[in-house]
Image (cartoon, rainbow, N blue to C red; front, side):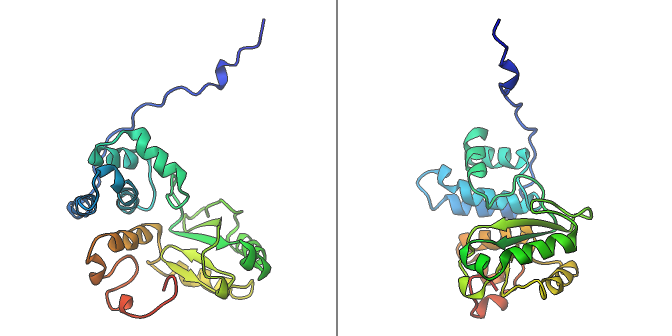
Amino acid sequence: MAESVTSNIREPQPTPAKESRFSELAIAELEEIASHYPERKAACLPGLWIAQREYDGYLPPAAIQEVADRLGLSYSEVEGVATFYTMYNLRKRGRHHLEVCTCLTCAVKGAYDVVHKLEKELGVHVGGTTADGEFTLSEAECLDFCGAATVMQVGDKYFTQLTPDNVKQVIDELRNSPDYTPAKLADSIVKVLVPGASATGGGSYSAEDLKNPAGPML
């Protein structure tokens, strides 16, 4: 008799419990964004950014379900979008998500030396989160700031020209900072998507900060 393979077949997952964490502001932002498209489905990406902000920096199943409900889509449609893009967090990250670029230019400039130094300082490997929930360490694809390699994105801020000698100073700075979190990154992106919203600031930055010229990120 042939060996059964049914144990490898995934059973359908139950529908997530419904939650409603979108604030009145978040609902208004989603409706404003959706009004600029011929179909509400087109607002799925912005809706996920709003959800990632409202759900504290990541997208549990309930967040995906809320976006689906508010846009009139199925859970599977929204889940397919959320799982396709690495910019959405499907699991909770540390308060600061350290994403070190290890593409060609940064790699040549010593990105992996920076990664190994971070692993030693934080006591975790790439993909891990520190026991205190403060940091998650990841590798990133090109962050489009090759002239300042090695580059690390932390929320809505780029740290540049990193080396094993100066990266500990960055970690110490972040431990004492309430800014540059996954939720504030999501907020900064939402503010760009809503016409005129960035005039009052967004994410980790005030309106005055945003008047100053900067690189890809302040």
